[in-house]
Amino acid sequence: MKPIPETTLVEPVAAEVAAIAILTAIIAMAIEHTALVILGSLLSMVVGPYAYWQQARLTDIRALQATQRVIQEQVDKLKQENEVLAQEVKKRTDSLQRMYDIQQALDFLLGLQRQSIDIFAKQVEVNEGILKQMQSNLKACVMQNFTFHGITK
Image (cartoon, rainbow, N blue to C red; front, side):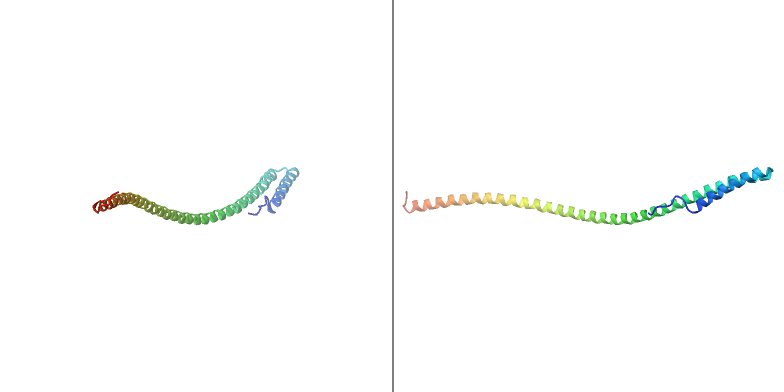
């Protein structure tokens, strides 16, 4: 936003006209002492400054309108950016939900894998037991064959 002047060219002119109106009113009252001149002079002394005051308020209103336009443009731009951000948040939320679903699936698979590993480890233990039993049986068989054939230690 570019700087807004505090006064316009019309304001100093209005101030000069007000000063001239007051000066001429005073001169008219000094020269002519009639009621009509005094009343007209007093009205001129009020109307001139009042016109200047109104012109100053008009300048302020124009400055406020310019400021309001700039602010409205910024608000509109921020609304657009807010809509873009809302769409991005929705995308990120959807992505986050998909990631959460994937995490749930991976946790489930990991649980299955742990169960499989536990089952496998138990199966290995059982097989070791069976293998030891088989080795023991094999030794007994060999010993029996040696004994049966008359070979002993």
